[in-house]
Image 1 (cartoon, rainbow, N blue to C red):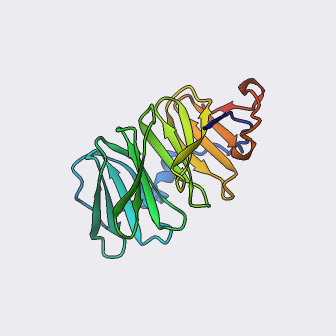
Image 2 (tube, rainbow, N blue to C red; image 1 turned 90 degrees about the vertical axis):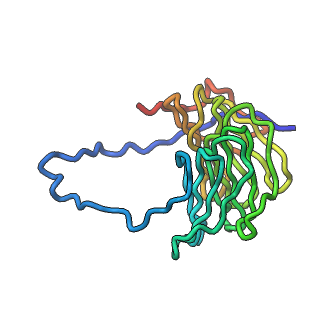
Length: 214
């Protein structure tokens, strides 16, 4: 049985505004790609490096995830299993597996070494738009098009928390280094910070601090 939790704190450090004046543009160096990786037949929606940087994963509207060797630039594998565009991909911190999700409302867990499907997480009501794995290599955050986020225990194969607070699609999610805090960003212009450990007694939204980003 999953628990619903609500945002409890948001802390944003204001950064000085940055702009490039016309007269400064001559100091900006031009940069060109060192390599072009071709193989997908659809829009690339997301990319991710493995923790050691040896493998690059690319998620595409062609319903596949491709793995590339970052040294040889050769394709290592094409991961097939989704039935709609793949919108998000992320590696586990230990590099042993990766997750992908998209328009089929499904998250697939892949063995990073064997390039095989390990599990499928289903039951999401929205399109999977963003994914993040905590440092424990089992806690997964999923951002959805219905304005919610979900936390799953990948090892147990079950949802543990439902995070309802956004009023628009959740395009980005990320865990803090210790895995105790999750941040989510949405089309509603807000970034929410969630205290995952306080899920048992969440404060109401009206008492939380939410700062819109304009």
